Image (cartoon, rainbow, N blue to C red; front, side, top):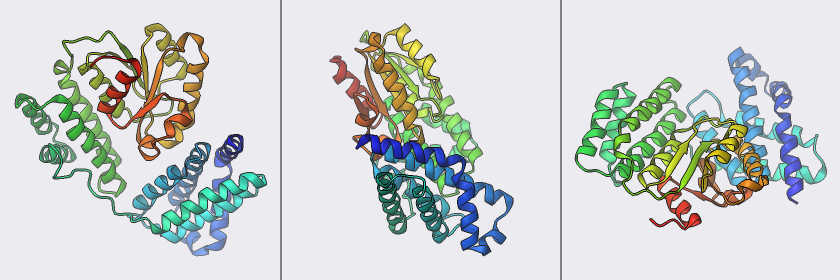
Length: 355
């Protein structure tokens, strides 16, 4: 059965180069008024969005996890709710995608495709696109997080930085600042971009500013108690969202581990060479975008095939694993963690490292 899901996923992924153009033509035939309304840029975006649909769909099918595709469609509905795109247009696009893709698949593959897309369409129809803020007044440091993000949205890095340094002076634990300010405001930044309240430039500025402010805290990170354990933390190939992985690396340093952080979009060959060189007890791999799960799975398989790396424990984290808690088994890891603190607990458990 797994082979059937895999073959379906591979074929759908391959359609990204041809299906978007075909769907656009058929969509225009069914809705001629849309062709008159669309500019050249909107036409290009339609094709781009269709390719994303196919990418997310193929990864969800590969993992046999409809929740992954449904969650992507939740994101899409919230995103399009603030643009001149109707639900009817999106649903018709998905129906066309389903029917055209089905014409290129075997009977068993068609059943899988239709099951995933039909569930996705029903989810899209009923999903409420309103997304609550990630900054919850009832959570620790909520007022600091709100003030911090407000400053960065305005482009005022210095007062944002000062608010964090004041927390340190007032003996707020660094881990609390990471979890309740940096992590929360990064998620809130993504939400504000999704609902068209922030530009891409603002989002990038906030992330870059947070990385800089985190670097100002490095003198406070290093633990006096060393555990003589090594960990490599990296994003998989194609993954550009690295701040979460950076936070994980910092947490391990605070916990006394010797961490090696390799950042975004690390080539698999380079990462495996580093694993062989540094011989860590644990490798932690991060994925934020569902369409990078295939790269992650291939990387873990390559590590597992190397006899010299048999003893290494592999943990994974990132948004797809929050959606599907058992997804770590599909990619071949030893476990997954919901945040940096959970990653330390899991790594300690897997290696019998005393806290």
